Each structure stands twice: as C-alpha cells, then as structure tokens.
View 1: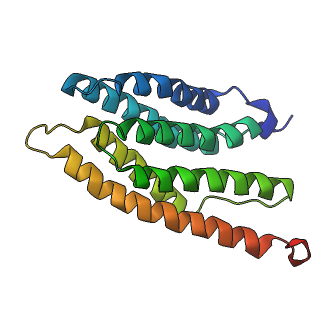
View 2 (view 1 turned 90 degrees about the vertical axis):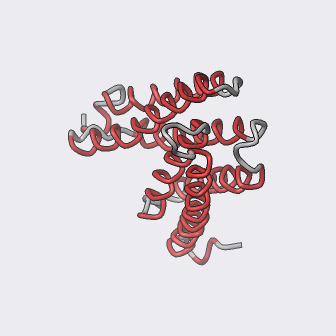
Length: 190
C-alpha cells in the first residue's frame, strides 16, 4: 500500500476533521454578539484555521497525503470561512456583497476542481490561493473578535484584511480558471 492510501485517518486528516467540527461551535458562538462570545468565537476560529496549515505541513513532511485529505482539506476551509462570513452578515460586521463574492468564488472553484479531476487535470494551489487562505483566516479572526482590545480596533483591522482577502480571492479564482483552460483539450471546449 502506498503512503497516499495507507494514512487516510492519520493526524493530518484528524486535524481536518477537527476543523470541520469547529464550524458549528463558531456558528453557535456567533449567535451571540457580546465581547465574550466574540472572543471565544475568534479563538475557536483561529485555532481551527491554524489546523489548516498544520495538517498540510504534517501531510507533506511525513508523507501522509491521502485522497481523503486532498478532498476534505479544501472542503473544511470553505465550510469554516463560509460559515463565519454568513454569520457575520447579520451582526453587521461583513457586507453581504463581500461575503457573496468570496463564497461564490469558493463554490465556483470547487466545481471547477471537480470538473478538472474528472478530466484528469490537476489544479494545484498557487501562491494566490495560499495568500487568499491566510488573509481570509486573519481577516475573519479579527472580524469575529470585533471589539477593541488593548486599544486595537479589531473590526477596522479585519475590514482592511478582508479587502486584501477579497482581492486575493478573486485573483486566485481567475488563476484557477486560466490554469484549467490552459490544460483542457481544445477539442473538448463547447
């Protein structure tokens, strides 16, 4: 059995599972708008986001890459980010149009990656995709935290980071589509 198939339930995939399990916890905490709920929601979101970087590092370092992990890792990220964005809209912390563009891009790229996989095309994440994830996680942590702590305006910081995340999100989305059409056989185009 190859390392790819042998470690479906290894540490990286358990961390991805923990990230998915954190989604309902973040959602419940965002039902409340007070400083304590925001603080604990931000801590939970930040820890869940950190597992994204840790599981990838462990999978590559210890050759624990699995098909399950390749599928679940980006799905876990999208669930966590989308849930946080949607929950922040009624709290007035994120404009709905920004959430729509980010979630829409995530759905479009997920669909594109599925189509690419069915055609035997690999769409590997590029530096824009990695920057997008880091900026989204940082922006949403600050926006969930929201309240000023130690003189830091976390909402203002979060909105500034969210603008950067939106740009990286859209650029990386365009990058995925360009990569797909470069590899897709011209005879298959509609």
